[in-house]
Each structure stands twice: as structure tokens, then as C-alpha cells.
Length: 75
Image (cartoon, rainbow, N blue to C red; front, side, top):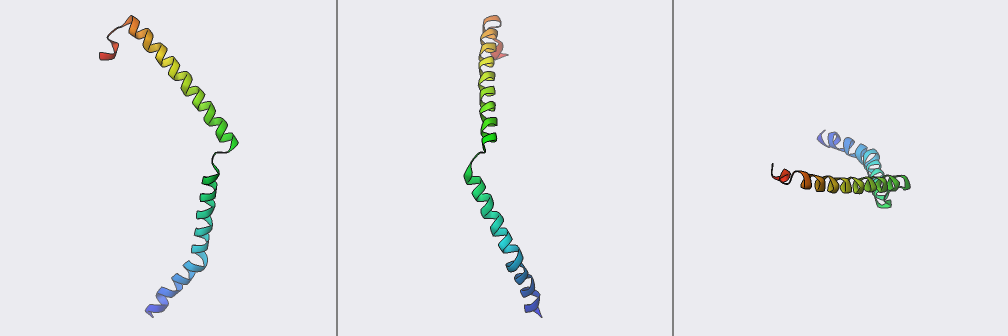
């Protein structure tokens, strides 16, 4: 009785769950290895350009504050 209780779920797992799990695992590995799509690459480049623009603005604002309020960083 105990052997049947264990063997049925084990057989179901080995026939249905394990192959599906392996297929999905290796499909996700392959997609991760392909890298970014063209659209994702464009989005990333746009975000990098925006971040660089923001960095330039921050530097400019810090220069203005340094000139007008010399000790603003210590407040």
C-alpha cells in the first residue's frame, strides 16, 4: 500500500512535470543568452542618453548653487 502511494505521484511527476520543467528551463536559458532585442536596445540607449543629459543638468545646477549659496552642501 505504501509503495503505490509513492509510485503513482512519482510516475506522474516523471511523465508530465519533469519534461515540461526541463523544456521551460532550457527555453528561458536560451532566451537569456540571446541578449537584448533591437527594441530593448533602443530603449536602453534612450535611457542612457536621458541619464547623461540629467547628469549635465545636475552639474550645472550645482555650479549655480555653489556660486550663489557657497555653503549649500553643508546645510
